[in-house]
Amino acid sequence: GLSDSEKSAVASLWEKIAPQTNKLGAESMERLFKNHPETKSFFSRFDISPGSQDLLTHGGKIFGALGEAIKSLDNLQKYQDLHTNKLKLSSDHMKLLSAAIIEVFTAHFGGEVNQAAWNKFLGEVGAILTSS
Image (cartoon, rainbow, N blue to C red; front, side, top):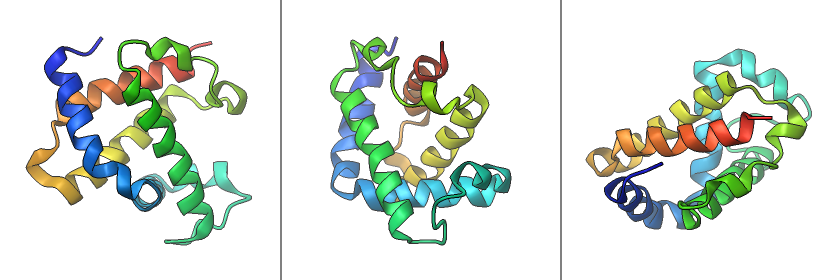
């Protein structure tokens, strides 16, 4: 689990992210597609052009789920049944998305991002979501 200082680092940055979840979520997906074009195939039914409503909506859903997880940092296991089990997302794809998210956070918030804490948090969330 995350240490108290890691939890604090994640939660404090989230306060700045929360008002822009759709925008930053969409940007994270765009970054994922740019860095790993092969991931576009998972979103064949989406308009994945930059700034599209589909990306804003789905990015917002992803970030909304992260926000819920941040509220439950001591009980992340309760998210085990979320949609990655249904969609069969692999842990590799979760890692790629996590890296894209951290890149976007760093682009927006620079030194305020505790990358180690965010890597650990997103890694734990990813491990829970992709375990069967």
